Structure formats: structure tokens, C-alpha cells
Length: 260
Image (cartoon, rainbow, N blue to C red; front, side, top):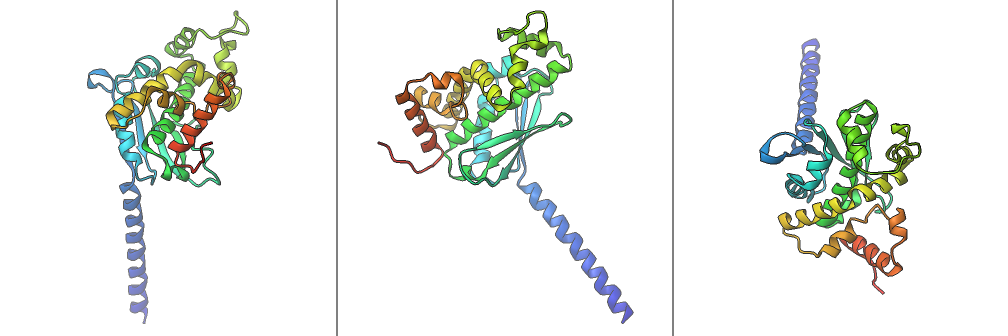
């Protein structure tokens, strides 16, 4: 009887280890890493995207977005460190489609965590690309902000080159960049529009060409307003254009809407 018990215990232990190993292997099989390398194929200015999301269309979108980013005007100007940074994508379930994604980052993190709303399963490829672009802009702002606070000269020079106002010209760290970065999502979006919006539109256009998505420059401009609707610039747009922007964004996200 004792030998039977030992055999059963050993069998259950081996089976448990097998299940655990199989679970780890399954997790790894859904994790992909994509790298955007700098000009001439070097490893500078790279953004590494690690995809652990279950969104079926996302891998193909990431590949072509990474190709669009490679050697772009945005990459050449705003990515500071030769080592670049990594962004880890994963799924979350939200109660509505309104928040497509969000970046989580803490002071001691070495990677940006980008959670994607599972509602994105019904989004078009161009909407997914627009979401990636928007959220990576948050990562770039955080990267510049963190490095500047650490005294990185390149980051500080980059901020000065933005031409933003200073509340106190005698104190560099009272630059409007830091004021807006410290004022939460609203301030971050103001910076994103002021600094990056034309580059964001250009990246989406580059993606469309590579991904063979047909839409006009006006479509790209409207889609890249997604997430920026509370900025001062957006509030100044004509009401008819706001309506067109909202319609374009909802349609690209696969949300059922009725056009008047």
C-alpha cells in the first residue's frame, strides 16, 4: 500500500510539472518581439514592441508600424537613447470602447506596459495603428521627462528645442514641458498635440502605404485626433469638423453609428 501511495504521489507531481511547463510554453507562444531599428540597420533609436495581446490582427499591424517608424522623421528627432526602450502589450477587459488603451509606467520600471482594451478586437488595422502611435507618444514623452530629471543633457537640449514657454526663465525645470507633464493626462495630451501631431499623422500615412490601406491625408489627420479631443486645439475646431472626426474614429474602431 505504501509503495502504491508513493507511486501515485510521484505521478501527480510529474503531471503537475508537465502542466506547468505546458502552461509556460503556451504563454511564450503568444509573445512576439518586434524591433524598429535606426537608419542603416543599426540598433540605435529602437523601439522594441513585445506583444502578449490576443488581438488577432495586431501582429501584422505591429510589423508594418515598426517598418513605418524605421528611419522616420519622428524617430530621428525624438528618440534619445541608443538602447531605446521596450513596450509590452497585453489585454484588459473594459466596460466600454471609449478607452482603447493606456500606458502604465512607474519610476523603477525598465519597460512600458501598454494595456489594450479587448474592444479593439473589432477595430480596423488603421485604428489599431493609430492607437499604437498615440500610446507610444506617451512613452516617448515619459522617456524624455525621466531622462531630463536624471540630468541627461540630450533630453534637456531636446526640451529646450521644443520652444515651449517658461513660467520662470531663470529656472529651466520650470519649463512648460514639466508643468504639462506634471498635470496628468490632460497636460500630456496638450504636449502630444503641440510637439508630435504632424509626426503622428505622417507615421499613420507611412503605415497605410506599407500595410496597403487606402485612405486620404484627411482620414489620417482625423484618426490621429483620437484621444486628443480634450485639447485646446480640438475645442477650437469647427463643430462640423469635430463631427467628422468623431465619425471617422468610431467607424475605424468598428463601433456601430448612424450618420445623420
